[in-house]
Amino acid sequence: MFLLIFAVWLILNGKVTAEICVFGLCLSAALFFFMCRFMDYSVKKELLFFALVPLLVRYLWVLVQEIVKANMAVLSIILSPDTEPEPAFVYFDTDFRTETARAMLADSITLTPGTITVSVEGDTFCVHCLDKTLAEGLNDSVFVRLLEEMERKEARLR
Image (tube, rainbow, N blue to C red; front, side, top):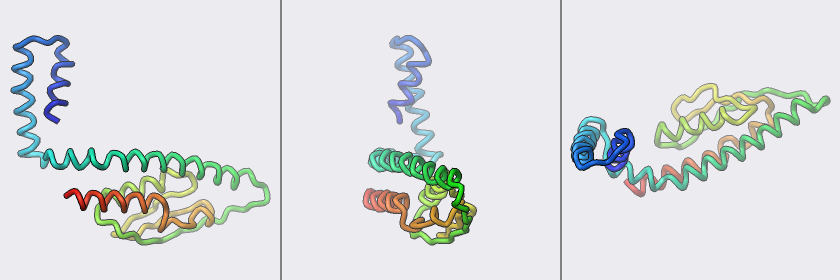
């Protein structure tokens, strides 16, 4: 983070001189110290984030795939003249340890067409589905498995 702050300083200055570099190094060090002292920032947390980046990229790729699949499913429900959608509320529990994982799952469910996360109370999710077929396997979805894997990796690295 220190190097990022220093790089932004150099970019915003537009030129590199000895005075600008020395002042930038001092300013970057002071800001970095402030972040570590008062904003609950640590290098360990940053390294943890970088360790989770491959899983986050995989998660985003799976999210895009699921959005495309859900679009096709909703499109077939809408365009099929003899299929009448049967809306449903689905309740399921998860075993997440962090609020971040719960929020990511709720957002991912809402981002996929045909499903909306209505509420999250503790470990219980309430999801409204356009059709009951869209609700199948929500409690053991690929999102849940990937988020659990992220939590396990985070726990090992802490």
